[in-house]
Length: 154
Image 1 (cartoon, helix red, strand yellow):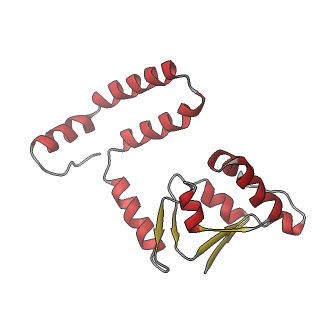
Image 2 (tube, rainbow, N blue to C red):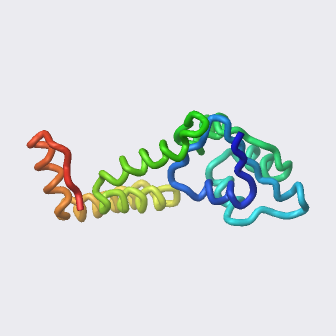
Image 3 (cartoon, one colour):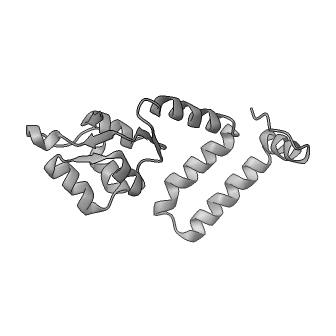
């Protein structure tokens, strides 16, 4: 079993994608020792989990397993015990094959979307699309698609 507790759980929650071993458990143990959460845990939990679940984890310091966190949408991928690091590195390698300018645009759009109106979000998408269309990586991506080869983004 792999345990991620307190600040380690806070750090995991700050990740954009989370790979966890099937036998992993996570806990906010702060209240168990008379402390309140830190490291952004309260913000991350309340933005990623139903309120009642987030409060239960913080108030009671109970364990939650990786499978439940995956069902709740926090964990992206479950790995066999001992394979989580290799699987996370493989996922990172897949992300690294993408155009970095597009990845930055997607993250910015995703960060802004929850508080934006549809009109504002559509305008932001348009602006990012045009900016990325003018980037050299768009030309490389389209050319690679037409030539039926993997793109070489910079």
